[in-house]
Length: 262
Ligand code: HEM
Image (cartoon, rainbow, N blue to C red; front, side, top):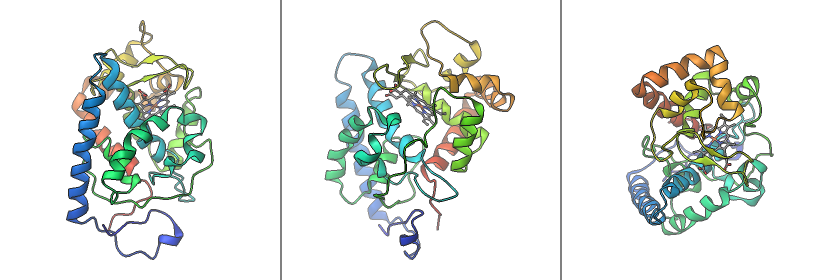
C-alpha cells in the first residue's frame, strides 16, 4: 500500500495515494475475519448480542472520524482513537471493548492501518477504496456532539467536519443499530424495535413521537423539530431506498474526512 497521508503537513510530500491490489486483498481477508468474529460473539443466545457487537464496531468508526476539523485539518478517521488519551474521552466510554476486539485482527493483518481497519468494521455499506495512514496525534476532548444539546450545536459540529444538514440526518440513522447504556452515556434503551436490523425504522419511530420503551436523544428529537432536518426525516421514513442511498454517500464522506483522492 502506498500510504495516503491524511491532513498532516509532515506527510504532505508523500507520493500520490494508491491502494494497490495486494492491500485490497488483505482488506478482504480482514473483512472475513471480522465477520467470523462477529458471528462468534453472537453465539450467546441473547438476541441483543449482535446489536451489541455491531454497535461496538460502529462506535470506533464514527468516534474516530467525528473529531475532524476541516479548518485545521486535524482529527478525523486516522486511527488515533486507539490511544488511551482519546478513548478515555467521556464520549468514548465503552469503545475500548471494540478496540480490543479489533486488535487480534490488526495483529493478523499488520499491513492494514488501524484507520482503515476501523472503517472496514462497517464496510457492508460501501467498499473501502483508500488507505489512510495512522496518526498518533489525538484531538482534544469535546469535538464529538453532545446528545443533550440542540440543532445549532449539531450543525456546529457537523459543519466543522465539512458535512451538511443532509449528512446529519442520514448519519443519525446509524441509531437504527445498537442501544445506549446508562453506565456509559447516561441514556438507556434502543431507538428501534429491532436494533439488529439496518433499515429506516429510526425515522419512522422519530415521526411517531414518544413511543413506549424506545429512546430518543435530544439530538434525535431536533431532527423532527427543525424544518430543514425534518424534510429528510420525512423522506427517509417513507422511502427506505433514499435512506440507504444517502446513508452510503454520507458514510463514505465521514470515513474519508481529510482524505484527498488521487
Ligand atoms: C450510540 C449520541 C451520531 C451510531 C449513541 C449513544 C449516544 C449517541 C449518547 C449512546 C452511547 C452509550 O450509551 O453507549 C450521538 C449523537 C450524535 C450521534 C449526539 C449526533 C448526531 C451517530 C452517528 C452514528 C452513530 C453519526 C453512525 C453513523 C451510534 C450507534 C450507537 C450509538 C451504532 C449504539 C452503540 C452501541 O450499541 O453500543 N450515540 N450519536 N451515532 N450511536 Fe450515536
